[in-house]
Image 1 (cartoon, rainbow, N blue to C red):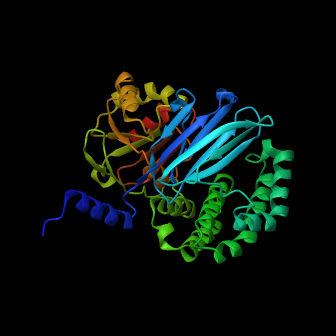
Image 2 (tube, one colour; image 1 turned 180 degrees about the vertical axis):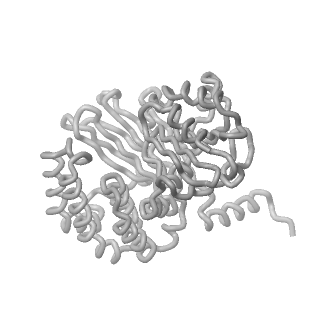
Image 3 (cartoon, rainbow, N blue to C red; image 1 turned 90 degrees about the vertical axis):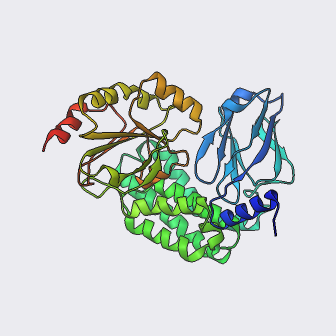
Length: 380
């Protein structure tokens, strides 16, 4: 029996969805009321894996978002540029409309039935309960921010105090999340906690191992098996086994912008430099001349250079690579799979791997020291 092409495609997509490989697409329209200062509105779209600033797509006070969705829901965060007013809404792949309006000197909104406001204590009883059990902890964290915000990443005693309060916060909520594990908001809340924890807690593999075990033991596979869930697990895994100097570099499979299949094992016997960057990253562009000098100084028999960009717009990416004459191998890492694999948290980050597959140099930001790199490579 011959099935129609439409039915065949639908069956294929259902199969892929079951394997979390067929991303849905959002259908969102945002309208900014004329009473709202458009320049004072900042809009971010979170697709389940990455965060995108989308203000540059606003035309005639309207924004249309048809973007990939890698989890069950996408998040829209609207923030007032000058002020502390903000709101967060969630959407799925159904047609959604959000109107940004002005109310009592603050941003407000109205929306249609396909937009979800999880952070409303009146309509979401689980959120109401979570707020109730964490009032003391959030108040404590807020006081710490108010008094020591400039020391949170510098002073060890303040960092440790902050970390302890983050852990205490999770200890308060995890029984509630466990009891409501099939509620997708529980998964969202846990994901937000992991994002907060991985930003401010450093060098604590035991805690991140605890979070990973909790993720796997608590939430159903329909959440964990999405690309969003897999990215969450990977972000915890790289903190349990951090990628550091003299450790084996994680192998990967990627396709270059020229269509070549790449794996790290392909380059055993020579050095490999991984350059994690993006075209919107000014420090990344500033170090391009140094990378070009390095490419000129060492042959491809000695050093393989792979620039890994997180750009979403391939047209702009190709234009910058062409204009800057970056004549080496490039990979577009749109979903940041390789960035997560290598625990990249800031751009630019340079990773140098030796002939045996060990990481021998890693640098985040700042000016690239070509002399240091060539000294390592030439030290037989």
